[in-house]
Image (cartoon, rainbow, N blue to C red; front, top):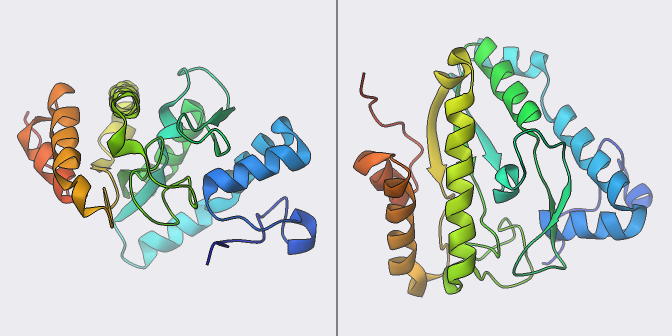
Length: 232
């Protein structure tokens, strides 16, 4: 069905407190902004992220033998300036769907928390503007995915890759060495078989132009999160 959620903890822990159903992250954030205002919507998203995992959760993962954690992010994680706090941004193809950016300070903190526990982090750029897969996780559901049909969206996507790499290179060494790999994207062009060629071309170009090399290009195109061997 279209409904993916009816709550949004910790601020809206019950269906009654939220007051609506939502189909995707973009749908949720847009409805939140319309219901409680942009500032309160941003605050609710930040509160959700801050409560998503705790240092105790992370320690528990390590004790259970896990050594890698996937950190899923939308394109909006890199849609703001490095020193900006979280803000609301509209999807450029579906303006009725909205996202909340991730401040670099918050992103740095998430990675540092995992790194301090001895965990490697797999950065998963899960979505692109306009929607880059067909499914409820594409950020704009139930709107149709548009990324592979619009050169302007694909250019924005390349900018996301650029900003992600700038962030990575600016990380403290302990956090940077904890980045175990990057996935571009999660299930790209999923259920869109006619977009396979344009998807592969975009992925190869996006990583090659940013200096990630052929290994990363191949892993990105395959949807793999396994890290490439690093040169000294």
